[in-house]
Length: 175
Image 1 (cartoon, rainbow, N blue to C red):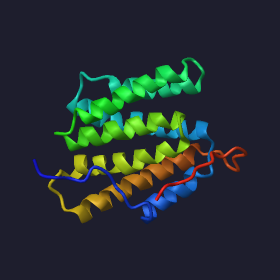
Image 2: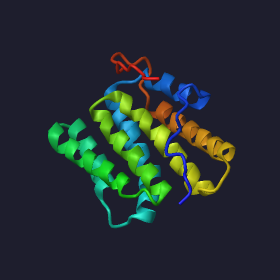
Image 3: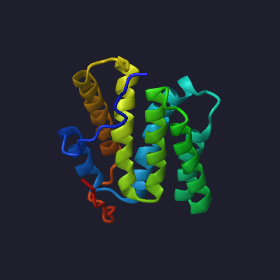
Image 4: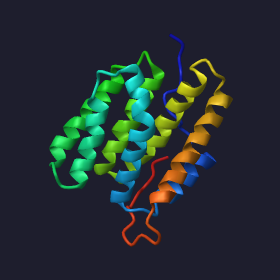
């Protein structure tokens, strides 16, 4: 199997910086909602195309929302998230499935640290590009497609953002 990139990794890319700037203005609860809802709308259907019998990513997303709504405790939610990461490891032969599973695991992990929500873009946007263009596409085309997906992610975040959020998440980005 040819080697492929698993993630976008340029945190200084304009499409990532724009997302990070908007993320920094929002509360952890808003970021959880954004990442989980976007994952359910865009990432989960790709996962189900390749792994229709595997409910671990769906369970991770649902658990994150249940934790946010104080229905379950953190250890239960973390167990579902770790299971989603395992699903990603088990899907290495299908880059699109692995990428969206990692994106969904990071989206759900936003309950642990708001910084995890950027994983939606770093893994998910590239997975969408692979799904759209194929794994043999040139990197420049894949990156452009991923950048467009990041733009859609940003628009969705702006739609649900709280203007002048009084309690934005404190996020320290690692380079």
